[in-house]
Image 1 (tube, rainbow, N blue to C red):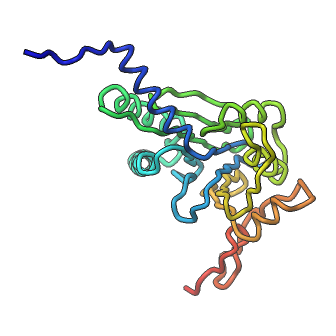
Image 2: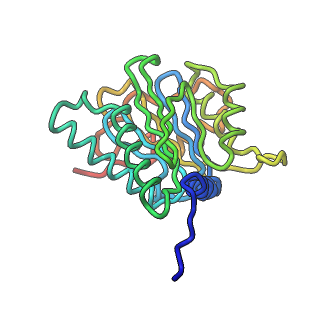
Image 3: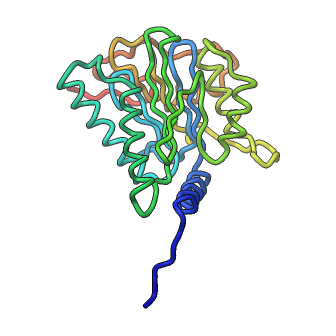
Length: 260
């Protein structure tokens, strides 16, 4: 009679953690950082339809690296959680902290009970009415939660990016300046080689803009993103409001509003 091979719990958890870390390290990096009027998210992502950065609720956004199908499941679950809580109680009861706790429980359960852990790392961020009210939470594959202050980097080069952000990022800087810093860091070679080209069409950029009344999440693309990256004026920023009239060109995406 043969007996199944015994693996100690410590070794099992270590193997699962190594597996998840290797999968995350293959992903392209994402940076989230505070700026003068909110929080900006910058990801290296050539796809225009498979997003790494998404809106969860009025003042809450989600960003992720790793396996797309796994973090997409988490994103959808987060939206359902937020909608149900906002409908059952009040919209102000939906918070990034509550969402991070829910994600932590889900990821922790999957890591300990399922045969394969999720190969994901996510950020849940909420913009406050003032900079001191901003919240950024980083969650790893095993359900660990860390509250970050000011900025966070995820992906294969997260350690190098975090070190550079710690040295160069400053609070309450204009969007153009913070965006330029994030793009410069994403262009750098972790192995110390020459910086690579990273044009605007290879980037996914979004903001949580505290100046907006309710839905603060906006994607930034098209001509505006190119102008923000290429401008010589680091104080360039987004307009506070976009004209909703039909036929108006959206300054955030470069698209034209359709007729009603």
